[in-house]
Amino acid sequence: MTKKVLLRWTQDREFVAIDLDGDGAVGITGPNPPESKSMGASHLLLAALGGCMGTTIIAVMLKRRLNIEFFEIEVTGEHIPKWPMTFTHYHLVYRIKGEGVTPKIMETAIYLAHERYCTVSSSTCGEKTYEYEILPAL
Image (cartoon, rainbow, N blue to C red; front, side, top):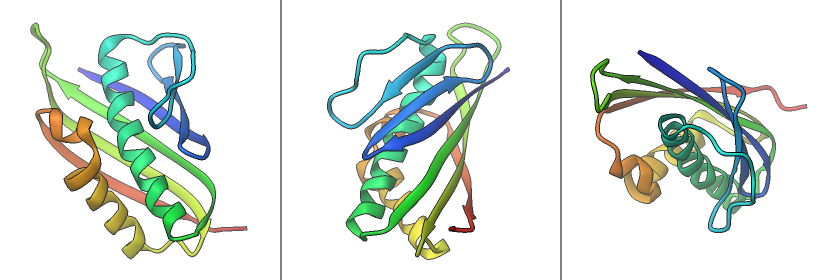
């Protein structure tokens, strides 16, 4: 069984998570999330994983003084069909556009988020894979 959410960076460390299997949406940010509509718990877990990774990656980009024009993360989770329907695999697709963003910077930012700073990533069981696309800056 597959579930999917799309996270789109809006500004600073804020994202909007959109349930691609339904029509729910929720704002995700660093420490103080804004009020918003709610989302199902398993989709929210995917959104939380993407949001946690995304806010950290954006923090790395901003620390490097990169001008990010666009950033989104698509998170797919595979889970077993029987209760408690535990997720066994997560796949994250990062799409980013900004002057100076390189594969090395993306790899470093993803590594730091996954291995050091993302609480949700370290708290979730299951294999995590990723890919990224660096879009041409305008």
